[in-house]
Amino acid sequence: MTLTVQQMREHLQLYFVMGSLNCIHDPVETLASAICGGVTMFQFREKGKGSLLGESRIHYAKTLQALCKENNIPFIVNDDVSLSLALDADGVHIGQDDEDACLVRRRMGNKIVGISAHTLDEARKACEQGADYIGVGPIYPTSTKHDTFPVQGTTIIREMRAMGIEIPLVGIGGVTQDNGAEVMSAGADGIAVISEISKAGDVRKAAARLKEIAVAGGQR
Image (spheres, rainbow, N blue to C red):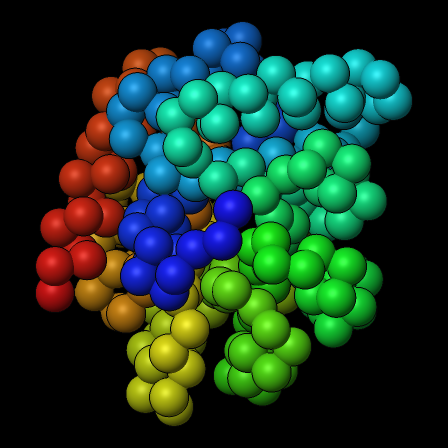
């Protein structure tokens, strides 16, 4: 899947990140409902104690990937470049402590490469390394991802835009229906969430509300 910058911005509007451990409902049903609600991009993030391994992990990934493909939603694999290539996924998302980004760019070819950035220097480097988008955060406190990085707030997004970072940006970390508009107004192209959708009583309704927030914020 090769996207223009504008298409990338549109797909980042509501970026759902999920692993089986994050869900209170069946994971496949959770993703299906989230897609019905308006999710525009999905990241397969199966990690942590008790997560699926081996063939079970691959089968699970393929099932979620098929759902995304049916709905023209980019399927991104978290951290694992080899798995992403094996699945012929649409792309991969890497952090600052993962495989060298320049090498990842070469391995992934024209597929999507997302890179996490927590500072202006990291954002600039991500641009130089060929990132298609940057995941900025953690914006707010979160219990889902145990980052060692301090909470950034929306200021970091504003600073990146003010310093000429024009690459598509998505804010992640503690983003909710209550603060999503702040992330968008700071200059993000979208919001990335885990628990706000995966642990919602009504997944479709939660996704729909977040999509409304993202779309409204994108019309700034």
